[in-house]
Amino acid sequence: MERRNGPRGGRSSYTFVQGAALLAAASLASRLIGGLARIPLTRLLGGEGMGLFQMAYVIYTLAITFATSGVTIATSRLVADSVARSRPREALACLRTALAVAVISGAGFWLVLDRWALLLARSLLGEARAASVIRAIAPSVIPVSIIAAVKGYFQGLQRMAAPATAQVVEQLVRVTAMMWLVSSLRAEGLEHAVGGAAWANMVGATAALVMLLALLAHPSARPGVGRERSRRSRRQAALGPGRLLGRFTGIAVPVAAGAALFPLTDAVQTFLVPGRLQAAGVDPRQATNLYGQLHGMAYPLAGLPAIAASALAAALVPAITEAVVCGPAGQVSRRTEAALRLTVMFSLPAAAGLVVLARPINELLFGIPEAGVPLVYVSAACVLIALQQTTAGVLQGLGRVSVPAYGLLAGLVANAAVTYFLTAVPALNISGAALGIVAGFLVAAGVNLAVVVGVTGAGRDVRGLVVKPAAAAAVMAVCASAVYELVTCGLGAGNTPATLAAVGTGVVSYAAALFLLGGVRREELEMVPVLGRLVRRGPRPR
Image (tube, rainbow, N blue to C red):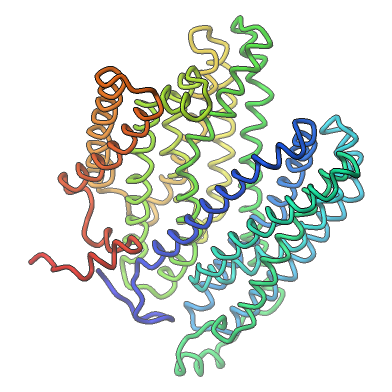
Protein backbone atom coordinates (compact mmCIF):
# COMPACT_ATOMS: atom_id res chain seq x y z
CA MET A 1 0.00 0.00 0.00
CA GLU A 2 1.47 3.33 -1.02
CA ARG A 3 2.81 5.81 1.46
CA ARG A 4 3.42 9.49 1.03
CA ASN A 5 5.36 12.25 2.68
CA GLY A 6 2.87 15.05 2.67
CA PRO A 7 2.09 17.73 5.24
CA ARG A 8 1.46 15.02 7.75
CA GLY A 9 4.15 12.70 6.45
CA GLY A 10 4.08 9.00 6.96
CA ARG A 11 0.32 8.63 6.99
CA SER A 12 -1.36 6.18 4.66
CA SER A 13 -2.96 7.42 1.49
CA TYR A 14 -6.08 5.58 2.66
CA THR A 15 -6.41 7.45 5.95
CA PHE A 16 -9.60 8.99 4.60
CA VAL A 17 -11.33 5.59 4.90
CA GLN A 18 -10.59 5.44 8.61
CA GLY A 19 -11.88 8.99 8.96
CA ALA A 20 -15.02 8.05 7.07
CA ALA A 21 -15.50 5.07 9.38
CA LEU A 22 -15.35 7.40 12.41
CA LEU A 23 -17.88 9.80 10.90
CA ALA A 24 -20.20 6.94 9.87
CA ALA A 25 -20.04 5.37 13.34
CA ALA A 26 -20.83 8.74 14.93
CA SER A 27 -23.76 9.28 12.56
CA LEU A 28 -25.17 5.82 13.30
CA ALA A 29 -24.76 6.34 17.05
CA SER A 30 -26.43 9.75 16.83
CA ARG A 31 -29.38 8.35 14.87
CA LEU A 32 -29.74 5.47 17.29
CA ILE A 33 -29.80 7.83 20.28
CA GLY A 34 -32.31 10.09 18.56
CA GLY A 35 -34.48 7.17 17.49
CA LEU A 36 -34.57 5.67 20.98
CA ALA A 37 -35.37 9.08 22.48
CA ARG A 38 -38.50 9.33 20.33
CA ILE A 39 -40.13 6.52 22.32
CA PRO A 40 -40.32 8.33 25.70
CA LEU A 41 -40.75 11.71 23.98
CA THR A 42 -43.87 10.44 22.19
CA ARG A 43 -45.24 9.17 25.49
CA LEU A 44 -44.62 12.56 27.12
CA LEU A 45 -45.96 14.77 24.30
CA GLY A 46 -48.54 12.50 22.69
CA GLY A 47 -49.52 12.59 19.04
CA GLU A 48 -50.56 16.25 19.05
CA GLY A 49 -47.36 17.41 20.72
CA MET A 50 -45.17 15.36 18.38
CA GLY A 51 -47.08 16.83 15.45
CA LEU A 52 -46.31 20.40 16.59
CA PHE A 53 -42.66 19.48 17.21
CA GLN A 54 -42.25 17.86 13.78
CA MET A 55 -43.91 20.80 12.01
CA ALA A 56 -41.45 23.25 13.53
CA TYR A 57 -38.55 20.87 12.94
CA VAL A 58 -39.24 20.79 9.18
CA ILE A 59 -38.80 24.58 9.02
CA TYR A 60 -35.71 24.40 11.25
CA THR A 61 -34.16 21.69 9.05
CA LEU A 62 -34.59 23.83 5.95
CA ALA A 63 -32.91 26.77 7.69
CA ILE A 64 -30.03 24.57 8.85
CA THR A 65 -29.60 23.16 5.34
CA PHE A 66 -29.18 26.61 3.82
CA ALA A 67 -27.09 27.99 6.69
CA THR A 68 -24.57 25.15 7.11
CA SER A 69 -24.33 22.73 4.19
CA GLY A 70 -22.00 24.83 2.07
CA VAL A 71 -19.96 26.11 5.04
CA THR A 72 -18.56 22.72 6.07
CA ILE A 73 -17.52 21.66 2.57
CA ALA A 74 -16.03 25.05 1.66
CA THR A 75 -14.02 25.20 4.89
CA SER A 76 -12.83 21.62 4.52
CA ARG A 77 -11.67 22.09 0.94
CA LEU A 78 -9.92 25.44 1.47
CA VAL A 79 -8.17 24.29 4.65
CA ALA A 80 -7.00 21.07 2.97
CA ASP A 81 -5.72 23.08 -0.01
CA SER A 82 -3.82 25.50 2.25
CA VAL A 83 -2.26 22.71 4.32
CA ALA A 84 -1.27 20.78 1.19
CA ARG A 85 0.48 23.93 -0.08
CA SER A 86 2.25 24.32 3.29
CA ARG A 87 0.42 27.54 4.19
CA PRO A 88 -0.72 27.10 7.80
CA ARG A 89 -1.51 30.79 8.23
CA GLU A 90 -3.79 30.67 5.21
CA ALA A 91 -5.54 27.64 6.72
CA LEU A 92 -6.23 29.63 9.88
CA ALA A 93 -7.44 32.55 7.76
CA CYS A 94 -9.84 30.13 6.06
CA LEU A 95 -11.18 29.18 9.48
CA ARG A 96 -11.67 32.83 10.45
CA THR A 97 -13.52 33.51 7.19
CA ALA A 98 -15.71 30.45 7.75
CA LEU A 99 -16.54 31.52 11.30
CA ALA A 100 -17.49 35.02 10.14
CA VAL A 101 -19.74 33.63 7.40
CA ALA A 102 -21.26 31.12 9.84
CA VAL A 103 -22.07 33.77 12.44
CA ILE A 104 -23.64 36.11 9.87
CA SER A 105 -25.56 33.28 8.17
CA GLY A 106 -26.73 31.77 11.45
CA ALA A 107 -27.83 35.11 12.86
CA GLY A 108 -29.68 35.93 9.64
CA PHE A 109 -31.65 32.69 9.62
CA TRP A 110 -32.36 33.02 13.35
CA LEU A 111 -33.88 36.47 12.78
CA VAL A 112 -35.95 35.20 9.83
CA LEU A 113 -37.33 32.29 11.85
CA ASP A 114 -37.97 34.45 14.92
CA ARG A 115 -39.61 37.39 13.17
CA TRP A 116 -41.59 35.37 10.62
CA ALA A 117 -42.52 32.47 12.90
CA LEU A 118 -46.25 33.22 12.91
CA LEU A 119 -46.35 33.77 9.14
CA LEU A 120 -44.48 30.50 8.49
CA ALA A 121 -46.68 28.61 10.93
CA ARG A 122 -49.91 29.86 9.39
CA SER A 123 -49.04 29.89 5.69
CA LEU A 124 -46.79 26.84 5.35
CA LEU A 125 -47.85 24.63 8.25
CA GLY A 126 -51.45 25.67 8.73
CA GLU A 127 -50.99 25.59 12.51
CA ALA A 128 -50.54 28.89 14.37
CA ARG A 129 -49.47 27.12 17.57
CA ALA A 130 -46.28 25.98 15.84
CA ALA A 131 -45.04 29.61 15.85
CA SER A 132 -43.91 29.45 19.50
CA VAL A 133 -42.06 26.20 18.79
CA ILE A 134 -40.30 27.76 15.80
CA ARG A 135 -39.21 30.69 17.98
CA ALA A 136 -37.91 28.29 20.63
CA ILE A 137 -35.82 26.31 18.16
CA ALA A 138 -34.63 29.29 16.07
CA PRO A 139 -31.64 30.45 18.24
CA SER A 140 -29.91 27.08 17.85
CA VAL A 141 -29.22 27.94 14.20
CA ILE A 142 -26.33 30.15 15.37
CA PRO A 143 -24.27 27.55 17.31
CA VAL A 144 -25.05 24.89 14.70
CA SER A 145 -23.70 27.19 11.96
CA ILE A 146 -20.50 27.82 13.93
CA ILE A 147 -20.15 24.08 14.55
CA ALA A 148 -20.34 23.54 10.78
CA ALA A 149 -17.37 25.87 10.26
CA VAL A 150 -15.24 24.26 13.00
CA LYS A 151 -16.12 20.77 11.78
CA GLY A 152 -15.05 21.77 8.29
CA TYR A 153 -11.71 22.97 9.66
CA PHE A 154 -10.99 19.67 11.42
CA GLN A 155 -12.13 17.72 8.36
CA GLY A 156 -9.78 19.80 6.23
CA LEU A 157 -6.95 18.70 8.50
CA GLN A 158 -8.24 15.11 8.08
CA ARG A 159 -8.75 14.83 11.84
CA MET A 160 -12.20 13.30 11.99
CA ALA A 161 -12.27 12.34 15.67
CA ALA A 162 -13.26 15.88 16.75
CA PRO A 163 -16.34 16.30 14.50
CA ALA A 164 -17.38 12.69 15.12
CA THR A 165 -17.21 13.12 18.89
CA ALA A 166 -19.01 16.48 18.71
CA GLN A 167 -21.92 14.89 16.82
CA VAL A 168 -22.44 12.26 19.52
CA VAL A 169 -22.01 14.77 22.34
CA GLU A 170 -24.54 17.12 20.76
CA GLN A 171 -27.12 14.35 20.47
CA LEU A 172 -26.57 12.99 23.98
CA VAL A 173 -26.85 16.43 25.61
CA ARG A 174 -29.83 17.36 23.42
CA VAL A 175 -31.76 14.21 24.30
CA THR A 176 -30.98 14.53 28.02
CA ALA A 177 -32.02 18.19 28.07
CA MET A 178 -35.13 17.37 26.03
CA MET A 179 -36.36 14.73 28.48
CA TRP A 180 -35.75 17.00 31.49
CA LEU A 181 -37.33 20.11 29.93
CA VAL A 182 -40.41 18.31 28.62
CA SER A 183 -40.97 16.57 31.97
CA SER A 184 -40.57 19.87 33.82
CA LEU A 185 -42.84 21.91 31.53
CA ARG A 186 -45.70 19.46 30.99
CA ALA A 187 -47.64 21.03 33.84
CA GLU A 188 -47.46 24.43 32.06
CA GLY A 189 -49.31 23.13 29.01
CA LEU A 190 -48.62 21.34 25.76
CA GLU A 191 -47.11 24.31 23.90
CA HIS A 192 -44.63 24.96 26.73
CA ALA A 193 -43.62 21.28 26.79
CA VAL A 194 -43.08 21.20 23.03
CA GLY A 195 -41.15 24.48 23.27
CA GLY A 196 -38.90 22.83 25.86
CA ALA A 197 -38.23 19.96 23.45
CA ALA A 198 -37.31 22.51 20.78
CA TRP A 199 -35.08 24.54 23.12
CA ALA A 200 -33.09 21.37 23.87
CA ASN A 201 -31.52 21.74 20.39
CA MET A 202 -29.86 24.93 21.64
CA VAL A 203 -28.53 23.15 24.73
CA GLY A 204 -27.09 20.27 22.71
CA ALA A 205 -25.55 22.51 20.06
CA THR A 206 -23.98 24.76 22.70
CA ALA A 207 -22.40 21.77 24.46
CA ALA A 208 -20.92 20.48 21.19
CA LEU A 209 -19.68 23.96 20.28
CA VAL A 210 -17.95 24.41 23.64
CA MET A 211 -16.22 21.06 23.19
CA LEU A 212 -15.07 21.91 19.65
CA LEU A 213 -13.81 25.36 20.67
CA ALA A 214 -11.84 23.77 23.52
CA LEU A 215 -10.24 21.36 21.04
CA LEU A 216 -9.63 24.22 18.64
CA ALA A 217 -7.76 26.20 21.32
CA HIS A 218 -5.33 23.32 21.88
CA PRO A 219 -1.94 23.67 20.09
CA SER A 220 -2.47 20.31 18.38
CA ALA A 221 -5.33 21.85 16.38
CA ARG A 222 -2.88 24.07 14.50
CA PRO A 223 -1.97 22.83 11.00
CA GLY A 224 1.52 21.30 11.16
CA VAL A 225 3.70 21.28 8.06
CA GLY A 226 7.20 20.74 9.36
CA ARG A 227 9.86 23.33 10.21
CA GLU A 228 11.31 23.80 6.72
CA ARG A 229 7.91 23.98 5.09
CA SER A 230 6.74 26.42 7.75
CA ARG A 231 9.68 28.75 7.01
CA ARG A 232 8.98 28.60 3.31
CA SER A 233 5.28 29.27 3.86
CA ARG A 234 6.07 32.59 5.54
CA ARG A 235 7.57 33.79 2.24
CA GLN A 236 4.54 32.68 0.22
CA ALA A 237 1.83 35.23 -0.37
CA ALA A 238 -1.38 34.08 1.28
CA LEU A 239 -4.74 34.90 -0.21
CA GLY A 240 -6.15 38.25 0.83
CA PRO A 241 -9.44 38.45 2.74
CA GLY A 242 -11.38 39.47 -0.37
CA ARG A 243 -10.07 36.63 -2.55
CA LEU A 244 -10.49 34.14 0.28
CA LEU A 245 -14.11 35.17 0.79
CA GLY A 246 -14.69 34.94 -2.96
CA ARG A 247 -13.30 31.40 -3.10
CA PHE A 248 -15.30 30.45 -0.02
CA THR A 249 -18.63 31.63 -1.42
CA GLY A 250 -17.76 30.13 -4.82
CA ILE A 251 -17.70 26.71 -3.14
CA ALA A 252 -20.37 27.20 -0.46
CA VAL A 253 -23.17 28.56 -2.66
CA PRO A 254 -23.30 25.69 -5.22
CA VAL A 255 -23.00 23.12 -2.42
CA ALA A 256 -25.85 24.76 -0.48
CA ALA A 257 -27.94 24.87 -3.67
CA GLY A 258 -27.35 21.16 -4.20
CA ALA A 259 -28.25 20.37 -0.60
CA ALA A 260 -31.49 22.32 -0.95
CA LEU A 261 -32.50 20.07 -3.87
CA PHE A 262 -32.72 16.99 -1.64
CA PRO A 263 -35.80 18.16 0.29
CA LEU A 264 -37.25 19.41 -3.02
CA THR A 265 -37.13 15.81 -4.28
CA ASP A 266 -39.37 14.75 -1.40
CA ALA A 267 -41.58 17.79 -1.95
CA VAL A 268 -42.13 16.85 -5.63
CA GLN A 269 -43.32 13.40 -4.59
CA THR A 270 -45.52 14.88 -1.87
CA PHE A 271 -47.26 17.11 -4.40
CA LEU A 272 -47.54 14.55 -7.22
CA VAL A 273 -48.07 11.10 -5.72
CA PRO A 274 -51.48 11.40 -4.00
CA GLY A 275 -53.10 12.98 -7.06
CA ARG A 276 -51.54 10.57 -9.55
CA LEU A 277 -52.60 7.60 -7.39
CA GLN A 278 -56.15 8.85 -7.50
CA ALA A 279 -55.82 9.16 -11.29
CA ALA A 280 -54.94 5.45 -11.25
CA GLY A 281 -58.23 4.70 -9.51
CA VAL A 282 -56.99 4.59 -5.91
CA ASP A 283 -59.33 6.23 -3.38
CA PRO A 284 -57.88 9.18 -1.40
CA ARG A 285 -57.59 7.31 1.89
CA GLN A 286 -55.75 4.37 0.31
CA ALA A 287 -53.55 6.83 -1.61
CA THR A 288 -52.42 8.35 1.68
CA ASN A 289 -51.74 4.86 3.03
CA LEU A 290 -49.64 3.91 -0.01
CA TYR A 291 -47.72 7.19 0.16
CA GLY A 292 -46.92 6.43 3.80
CA GLN A 293 -45.68 2.95 2.88
CA LEU A 294 -43.24 4.41 0.35
CA HIS A 295 -41.98 7.51 2.14
CA GLY A 296 -42.41 6.39 5.74
CA MET A 297 -41.10 2.82 5.41
CA ALA A 298 -39.54 1.76 2.09
CA TYR A 299 -37.60 4.88 1.06
CA PRO A 300 -35.92 5.41 4.49
CA LEU A 301 -34.67 1.80 4.38
CA ALA A 302 -33.24 2.33 0.90
CA GLY A 303 -31.44 5.43 2.17
CA LEU A 304 -29.61 3.71 5.03
CA PRO A 305 -26.37 3.06 3.05
CA ALA A 306 -26.23 6.80 2.41
CA ILE A 307 -25.13 7.24 6.05
CA ALA A 308 -21.82 5.55 5.26
CA ALA A 309 -21.62 7.19 1.83
CA SER A 310 -22.08 10.72 3.21
CA ALA A 311 -19.35 10.07 5.78
CA LEU A 312 -17.08 8.79 3.01
CA ALA A 313 -17.87 11.90 0.94
CA ALA A 314 -16.96 14.20 3.85
CA ALA A 315 -13.62 12.43 4.25
CA LEU A 316 -12.98 12.44 0.49
CA VAL A 317 -13.15 16.24 0.08
CA PRO A 318 -9.84 16.99 1.89
CA ALA A 319 -8.24 13.72 0.73
CA ILE A 320 -8.87 14.43 -2.97
CA THR A 321 -7.94 18.11 -2.54
CA GLU A 322 -4.62 17.12 -0.97
CA ALA A 323 -3.94 14.57 -3.73
CA VAL A 324 -4.62 17.19 -6.43
CA VAL A 325 -2.25 19.71 -4.84
CA CYS A 326 0.72 17.63 -3.71
CA GLY A 327 0.05 13.95 -4.31
CA PRO A 328 2.14 11.77 -6.64
CA ALA A 329 0.91 10.98 -10.14
CA GLY A 330 -2.16 8.80 -10.12
CA GLN A 331 -3.05 9.34 -6.46
CA VAL A 332 -6.35 11.09 -7.26
CA SER A 333 -7.36 8.16 -9.45
CA ARG A 334 -6.34 5.57 -6.83
CA ARG A 335 -8.24 7.29 -4.02
CA THR A 336 -11.30 7.72 -6.20
CA GLU A 337 -11.14 4.08 -7.28
CA ALA A 338 -10.91 2.96 -3.65
CA ALA A 339 -13.90 5.11 -2.69
CA LEU A 340 -16.03 3.81 -5.57
CA ARG A 341 -15.16 0.19 -4.78
CA LEU A 342 -16.06 0.64 -1.12
CA THR A 343 -19.33 2.34 -2.04
CA VAL A 344 -20.40 -0.47 -4.35
CA MET A 345 -19.21 -3.11 -1.87
CA PHE A 346 -21.50 -1.94 0.95
CA SER A 347 -24.47 -0.64 -1.05
CA LEU A 348 -24.95 -3.46 -3.56
CA PRO A 349 -25.57 -6.21 -0.97
CA ALA A 350 -27.91 -3.85 0.89
CA ALA A 351 -29.99 -3.44 -2.26
CA ALA A 352 -30.02 -7.19 -2.94
CA GLY A 353 -31.02 -7.94 0.64
CA LEU A 354 -33.91 -5.49 0.52
CA VAL A 355 -35.20 -7.09 -2.68
CA VAL A 356 -35.29 -10.70 -1.42
CA LEU A 357 -36.35 -9.85 2.15
CA ALA A 358 -38.60 -6.86 1.40
CA ARG A 359 -41.80 -8.24 2.94
CA PRO A 360 -40.14 -9.95 5.95
CA ILE A 361 -38.13 -6.83 6.83
CA ASN A 362 -41.18 -4.57 6.66
CA GLU A 363 -43.20 -7.00 8.74
CA LEU A 364 -40.39 -7.15 11.32
CA LEU A 365 -39.88 -3.38 11.57
CA PHE A 366 -43.31 -1.91 10.88
CA GLY A 367 -45.78 -4.79 11.02
CA ILE A 368 -46.90 -3.94 7.46
CA PRO A 369 -45.56 -6.58 5.05
CA GLU A 370 -47.34 -5.05 2.04
CA ALA A 371 -44.90 -2.11 2.26
CA GLY A 372 -42.43 -4.60 0.81
CA VAL A 373 -43.92 -4.02 -2.66
CA PRO A 374 -42.63 -0.43 -3.10
CA LEU A 375 -39.43 -1.45 -1.27
CA VAL A 376 -38.59 -3.96 -4.03
CA TYR A 377 -38.85 -1.19 -6.63
CA VAL A 378 -37.02 1.50 -4.66
CA SER A 379 -34.21 -0.79 -3.43
CA ALA A 380 -32.00 0.12 -6.42
CA ALA A 381 -31.80 3.59 -4.88
CA CYS A 382 -29.52 2.05 -2.22
CA VAL A 383 -26.67 1.92 -4.74
CA LEU A 384 -27.59 5.10 -6.61
CA ILE A 385 -27.90 7.37 -3.55
CA ALA A 386 -24.61 6.04 -2.17
CA LEU A 387 -22.85 6.60 -5.52
CA GLN A 388 -24.29 10.11 -5.79
CA GLN A 389 -22.96 10.98 -2.32
CA THR A 390 -19.50 9.50 -2.88
CA THR A 391 -18.99 11.02 -6.32
CA ALA A 392 -20.18 14.39 -4.98
CA GLY A 393 -17.36 14.22 -2.40
CA VAL A 394 -14.82 13.47 -5.15
CA LEU A 395 -16.10 16.32 -7.33
CA GLN A 396 -16.02 18.78 -4.44
CA GLY A 397 -12.44 17.74 -3.72
CA LEU A 398 -11.58 18.31 -7.39
CA GLY A 399 -13.14 21.77 -7.26
CA ARG A 400 -16.08 20.81 -9.54
CA VAL A 401 -18.58 21.89 -6.91
CA SER A 402 -21.37 22.82 -9.32
CA VAL A 403 -21.61 19.41 -10.99
CA PRO A 404 -23.48 17.64 -8.12
CA ALA A 405 -26.03 20.47 -8.04
CA TYR A 406 -26.64 20.21 -11.79
CA GLY A 407 -26.92 16.43 -11.46
CA LEU A 408 -29.48 16.71 -8.67
CA LEU A 409 -31.44 19.29 -10.67
CA ALA A 410 -31.56 16.97 -13.68
CA GLY A 411 -32.51 14.13 -11.35
CA LEU A 412 -35.32 16.22 -9.90
CA VAL A 413 -36.79 16.66 -13.38
CA ALA A 414 -36.44 12.92 -14.11
CA ASN A 415 -38.05 12.06 -10.77
CA ALA A 416 -41.01 14.35 -11.46
CA ALA A 417 -41.53 13.05 -15.01
CA VAL A 418 -41.35 9.34 -14.15
CA THR A 419 -43.46 9.79 -11.03
CA TYR A 420 -46.12 11.73 -12.95
CA PHE A 421 -46.55 9.16 -15.71
CA LEU A 422 -45.90 5.81 -13.99
CA THR A 423 -47.79 6.44 -10.74
CA ALA A 424 -50.99 6.87 -12.77
CA VAL A 425 -50.56 3.40 -14.32
CA PRO A 426 -52.98 1.15 -12.37
CA ALA A 427 -50.68 -1.89 -12.55
CA LEU A 428 -47.87 0.10 -10.89
CA ASN A 429 -49.51 2.85 -8.75
CA ILE A 430 -47.16 3.45 -5.76
CA SER A 431 -44.41 1.38 -7.38
CA GLY A 432 -44.36 3.98 -10.16
CA ALA A 433 -43.48 6.63 -7.56
CA ALA A 434 -40.72 4.32 -6.27
CA LEU A 435 -39.36 4.09 -9.81
CA GLY A 436 -39.49 7.90 -9.97
CA ILE A 437 -37.12 8.07 -7.00
CA VAL A 438 -34.81 5.53 -8.66
CA ALA A 439 -34.86 7.45 -11.95
CA GLY A 440 -34.00 10.70 -10.18
CA PHE A 441 -30.95 9.28 -8.43
CA LEU A 442 -29.94 7.32 -11.53
CA VAL A 443 -29.63 10.60 -13.43
CA ALA A 444 -27.97 12.45 -10.53
CA ALA A 445 -25.43 9.67 -9.91
CA GLY A 446 -24.89 9.22 -13.66
CA VAL A 447 -24.00 12.89 -14.18
CA ASN A 448 -21.54 12.80 -11.27
CA LEU A 449 -20.01 9.49 -12.29
CA ALA A 450 -19.52 10.54 -15.91
CA VAL A 451 -17.52 13.60 -14.85
CA VAL A 452 -15.54 11.69 -12.19
CA VAL A 453 -14.53 8.95 -14.64
CA GLY A 454 -13.68 11.50 -17.31
CA VAL A 455 -11.50 13.63 -15.00
CA THR A 456 -9.80 10.99 -12.82
CA GLY A 457 -9.83 7.89 -15.03
CA ALA A 458 -11.12 5.84 -12.10
CA GLY A 459 -13.96 3.33 -12.27
CA ARG A 460 -12.91 1.63 -15.49
CA ASP A 461 -12.19 -1.73 -13.86
CA VAL A 462 -15.79 -2.88 -14.34
CA ARG A 463 -14.96 -6.48 -13.41
CA GLY A 464 -13.55 -5.55 -10.01
CA LEU A 465 -15.89 -2.65 -9.38
CA VAL A 466 -19.23 -4.19 -10.38
CA VAL A 467 -19.09 -7.79 -11.61
CA LYS A 468 -17.46 -9.43 -8.59
CA PRO A 469 -19.54 -7.58 -5.94
CA ALA A 470 -22.69 -8.27 -8.00
CA ALA A 471 -21.86 -11.98 -8.15
CA ALA A 472 -21.23 -12.06 -4.40
CA ALA A 473 -24.51 -10.19 -3.81
CA ALA A 474 -26.35 -12.76 -5.94
CA VAL A 475 -24.88 -15.59 -3.84
CA MET A 476 -25.93 -13.70 -0.71
CA ALA A 477 -29.48 -13.22 -2.01
CA VAL A 478 -29.87 -16.95 -2.75
CA CYS A 479 -28.49 -17.96 0.67
CA ALA A 480 -30.59 -15.43 2.60
CA SER A 481 -33.77 -16.40 0.78
CA ALA A 482 -33.09 -20.13 1.30
CA VAL A 483 -32.46 -19.69 5.02
CA TYR A 484 -35.66 -17.65 5.45
CA GLU A 485 -37.69 -20.40 3.75
CA LEU A 486 -35.94 -23.10 5.77
CA VAL A 487 -36.59 -21.41 9.13
CA THR A 488 -40.23 -20.50 8.38
CA CYS A 489 -41.36 -23.59 6.44
CA GLY A 490 -38.93 -26.24 7.60
CA LEU A 491 -38.66 -25.30 11.27
CA GLY A 492 -42.02 -23.57 11.63
CA ALA A 493 -40.50 -20.46 13.24
CA GLY A 494 -42.03 -17.02 13.00
CA ASN A 495 -41.01 -14.06 10.84
CA THR A 496 -38.71 -12.39 13.38
CA PRO A 497 -36.24 -15.27 13.96
CA ALA A 498 -36.40 -16.19 10.27
CA THR A 499 -35.59 -12.63 9.14
CA LEU A 500 -32.75 -12.25 11.64
CA ALA A 501 -31.29 -15.62 10.59
CA ALA A 502 -31.57 -14.66 6.92
CA VAL A 503 -29.86 -11.30 7.46
CA GLY A 504 -27.03 -12.93 9.43
CA THR A 505 -26.60 -15.57 6.76
CA GLY A 506 -26.59 -12.89 4.11
CA VAL A 507 -23.77 -10.95 5.78
CA VAL A 508 -21.59 -14.04 6.21
CA SER A 509 -22.28 -15.47 2.73
CA TYR A 510 -21.60 -12.12 1.03
CA ALA A 511 -18.28 -11.67 2.81
CA ALA A 512 -17.25 -15.26 2.02
CA ALA A 513 -18.31 -15.05 -1.64
CA LEU A 514 -16.58 -11.70 -2.13
CA PHE A 515 -13.37 -13.09 -0.65
CA LEU A 516 -13.48 -16.32 -2.71
CA LEU A 517 -14.19 -14.42 -5.92
CA GLY A 518 -11.23 -12.13 -5.30
CA GLY A 519 -13.49 -9.12 -5.02
CA VAL A 520 -11.69 -7.66 -2.00
CA ARG A 521 -8.00 -6.83 -1.86
CA ARG A 522 -5.60 -7.00 1.05
CA GLU A 523 -5.04 -3.23 1.00
CA GLU A 524 -8.81 -2.71 1.24
CA LEU A 525 -8.97 -4.95 4.30
CA GLU A 526 -6.12 -2.90 5.77
CA MET A 527 -8.32 0.21 5.51
CA VAL A 528 -10.94 -1.23 7.88
CA PRO A 529 -10.52 -0.04 11.50
CA VAL A 530 -9.56 -2.85 13.95
CA LEU A 531 -9.61 -5.52 11.21
CA GLY A 532 -6.96 -3.61 9.27
CA ARG A 533 -4.59 -3.76 12.22
CA LEU A 534 -4.89 -7.54 12.36
CA VAL A 535 -4.38 -7.87 8.60
CA ARG A 536 -1.27 -5.68 8.66
CA ARG A 537 0.25 -7.85 11.40
CA GLY A 538 -0.35 -11.03 9.41
CA PRO A 539 2.04 -12.50 6.83
CA ARG A 540 2.08 -10.87 3.41
CA PRO A 541 1.60 -13.08 0.33
CA ARG A 542 4.68 -13.47 -1.84
